[in-house]
Image 1 (cartoon, helix red, strand yellow):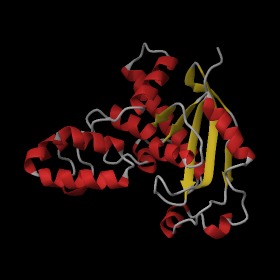
Image 2 (cartoon, rainbow, N blue to C red; image 1 turned 45 degrees about the horizontal axis):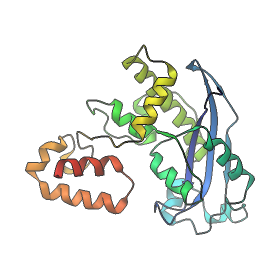
Image 3 (tube, rainbow, N blue to C red; image 1 turned 45 degrees about the vertical axis):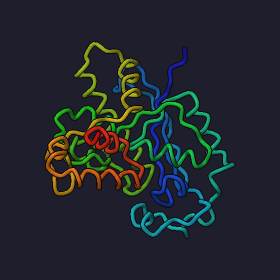
Length: 249
């Protein structure tokens, strides 16, 4: 049986609206795992800019440094050879992304389906059993885990390189927790974890930073209801929504 590849992927978009916004840059790398992550065969990175059907927001430009002028002469994402190649590799392999729900939503807006995925954000939360890590965004984890990579900042291509390094670190943590498990079993477990919300134990932001979420139910239930409404409006953090609904039920 042909081994599935891991498709490390990152997108840059016109904004953060899961329904409205569109892709303006995509990068991905195919990795064939051979035995263990320290003996992998990596295929060449594929990265490209696209002209989106709606303008890039000022907020998005301030983060990605991709401007409307930079992409005005680029091809559209839909109908390109790039999208056909991407659809093909995602069909039978496993996508790896940080906060995968966002990337999946952006790909869905372009009519691309993602059958299987691993979310390194969710894995980092799950494996941090005592919730000692203050933040879980990609670049914070890069420095927290002290992964040694050199990348160009503010690009999907650079984020893919960091993403792969973060994944390898998380894989090593998982190996230590289950030393007898095969690589295939660990990957399979990572897919399962990524598909289900993780219960968050502590606040890593706001006025209750460092306090346990369960303790705030009696202390400030109004705040949790407000936060739940906010997270529902944002629609990008299933773990927090799951946690708040669990605590407030």
